[in-house]
Length: 111
Image (cartoon, rainbow, N blue to C red; front, side, top):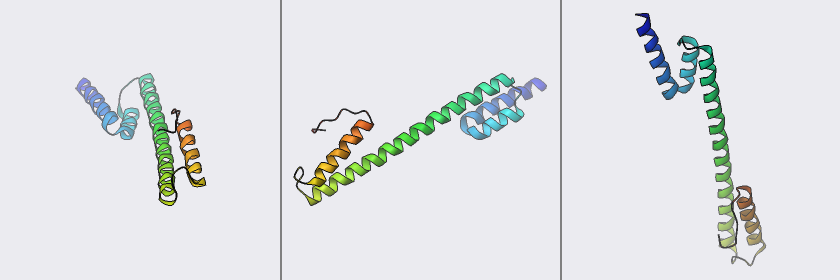
């Protein structure tokens, strides 16, 4: 009977690690009969995953905000002035160039 209980603990732990990760980590540490090294390795892998995911989320949000600012500036300039004839359009052009430089995109005025 003990072997069946161990199998169910493992199955439940794996399911919780996949579906409800934070709860799965707690269950893994408190109830699973896994070796301590395995628990540490799984915890480190999940920690690295969350760090990478969080970093990508921050970068995406920052890029989205910059893109919105550039788009808004260009739209305002187009409403107010003929494109290319005002100081505002030069300011917008500088924002666009900065946006492309920051994200490593090659910029040309035809973009």
